Length: 313
Image (cartoon, rainbow, N blue to C red):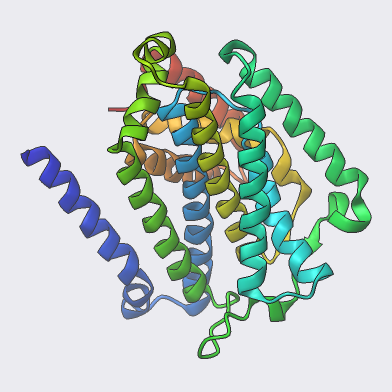
């Protein structure tokens, strides 16, 4: 009980600190350019944290290893780009379109992939990622291809009191609120009968079926919800970077999410966020080093898998 209260209190303190961070940075007298750069980096890390949380639901909670999770990340960003550039929509309509496209695709794909046996699941999802990436490149007149789509400045206007997503403070606080909402949703979900059933599938799918659970439908639900949340991360990434890149569809982003979840402790919501922060901070630290960040992350993942197969405590 004491540990639970300690964790909850620490989380609330961290949340208050993050919310007050822009003001605190100005209070200590940092240059505005430094503050903007720091808030921009933290915003991107939080968005990747949302992506990691979505992957944790699929892999950490349900036990499904997917290498196609990045497809929904890319679809969320692509939906924003299409809505803004081809259909002339503003911030909120483009946000909704991005969520609808990625969410619908996730639930449709979930109906298909939930029928595939676990041993072949990662192969099928990896193929889907490759196919999606190639399709984006092929229809380059519509998707922007390898060059991607650049969002016009007016689409970043929130339409409220001259607020714009170009403003780093607005970006940061907006994404922080979304991150807290996603975390709260998944924390609540883990305590519901659905969440407990998904955990049972991870531990013993045959036992879950014998008890009477429809494991196919449960995996479908997990795939759909996690994919929709990945799409949300893609939507936010498109707005934060003011662009959509075909690279978001690459299976390597799914591998990165897997690494973040394992680093933080598979199945742990807080761990997924800490793993993301650690890995992205590590990547930033080594971005100009002679040894590439992906290689270093791979080495770190191998060491963790070797010595702490269940992730960090």
